[in-house]
Amino acid sequence: MKNKLFGFLAAAFLIFSCSDSELVNMKELSNGAKLYKNNCANCHQEDGSGLANLIPPLYHSDYLSKNASKLPCIITQGLGGEISVNGKTYTMRMAAIQHLNKEELNDLCTYVLQKFPEQAIQPEVWKKSPADSCW
Ligand code: HEC
Image (cartoon, rainbow, N blue to C red; front, side, top):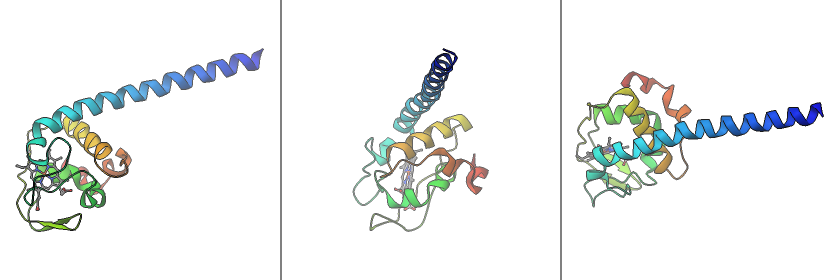
């Protein structure tokens, strides 16, 4: 009897804690999706496919996967110079986007790195990095 009760409590705790963290995540993701639409999609497109030879794709971008920890910096400082994304060269400059607060930047990075890389990149990878200086 005691065991059953413990099992029930443990299961209830698991269910509650899972749905709790999922809720936070869902909120970050839907907020991030809105921010992406308003700040990035006009160039990178809503599906992340980029624009011809001018704007590199985010969808399955090898550059983004390799530089995930720099994403907050790429957004707040912009990016210039020649870069290679999925075997193609891009040279146009991306202007810095500086009006986002820390929470917005967090939600935006969460969304971009869950949605576009071939394998979703978890926040641990990019949150506690030297790029923290860009938050
Ligand atoms: C005005 C157009 C424009 C907007 C808006 C813009 N970008 Fe970019 N982005 C570019 C260009 C152009 C490059 C290529 C820069 C280079 O060649 O050095 C780039 C490069 C990148 C890269 C690295 C290359 C890749 O494709 O993986 C990332 C990541 C990125 N942008 C993310 C974002 C995010 C996130 C936003 C929204 C917060 C955003 N960009 C908004 C034009 C834009």
